[in-house]
Length: 277
Image (cartoon, rainbow, N blue to C red):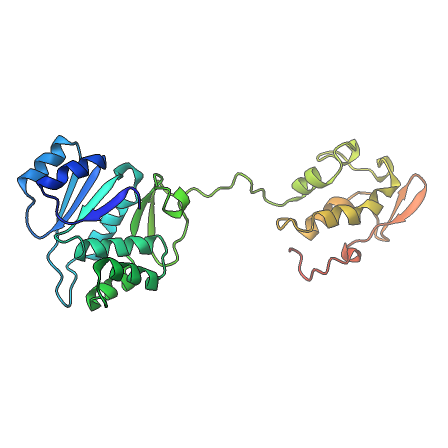
């Protein structure tokens, strides 16, 4: 990535090039203490130097714990720490392992992760311990709000396909556009607000309806809202048939006319088996 660089152990002759990167963070993964030159240069350049002692890989062990890996990844995906330079002794072993796990955070497929490492290391096969570590790594990773744009588009995702995430601050569910379905909501959004007799809270009277054709319009109104997943058919039915003048015979008297009002809305041919859809 543009703001994450990897390489070998920096020496005096590399400092001029590193200065051009305008680094905020330098991560060292080496088995011994850092040189005084590197420590002094980072202090002079106001670079946050993070040193973790990591031995060279053995055939059976990467010498990097899952907890350390999760900590490193948490630093690398925080925009406040970038640009960042990470290195080990040769820029391949420990550094390559971290980059492979970073690709896993980015949800790369494992074959693509392996292939990238092999090309960079100019190797034919992965060490078994490296392949095992990357494939099984699942330690919880700290995710802040300040993500770089190359990770998930710069926005936090609630669930990762293969890794555990810890959010700081916690994710807040977006409920701004979620309204529970109830009779009042159905009335507010579906009944003509220009008809004062059908506004929420008003005593409904069939004799006071503005038009006897109101019931004829129900199929059109209902069909226009079929895609609304929060709409419950029972709520709609109650909203349109709860008038106190609707009697058991399902007839209502409007301006001297007798109009049949179905007690259910099955006649709309909604092809719905359950109450909600």
